[in-house]
Image (tube, rainbow, N blue to C red; front, side):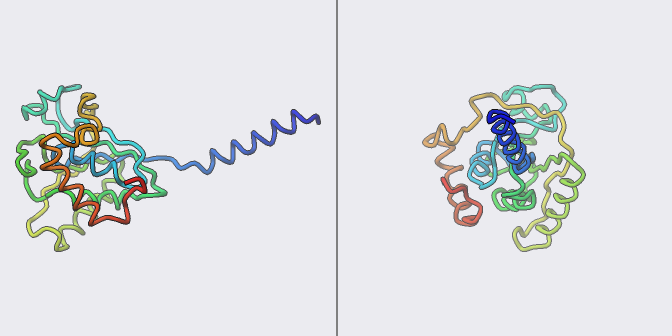
Length: 202
């Protein structure tokens, strides 16, 4: 066997080994009020590899923001969170979800009012559904919130990506009024409450 064949065999084995050790990512979809806030928080969670703001749960195909914000399409503003389950679990993502918005206010988060701002967990599998329902019950039984949780737990349907200007919104517009008044304080509280889940670069 010549040297070229030996080197090719070694590189092939190394490549197979690397592929076997790579983690497969999973996806979670959450609605927790304005997606600018939710995106900014999950962007800072260790193990999250990609974030996308979008719309889910409505009856109109590929709606625009203006359609969704009217409240007539049935969509919720959501974030699609791609994560590495070897670094962070779905349960931990849910813990962040319960602590970083008010899941007891129906169709409302602060001054943002309407069904598009509803608290919702859109599951992608029976396992996610079961985990979400157990997490909801556990949180309801705790003293985190004094009122009953009204979060919707439902299968993901009619998802579409939001317009480009909604993506990475806080990072691109940190000094905008809504970002400095609403999002920045939420981020500060999240960093204080979840230092163990923060990305190293935060």
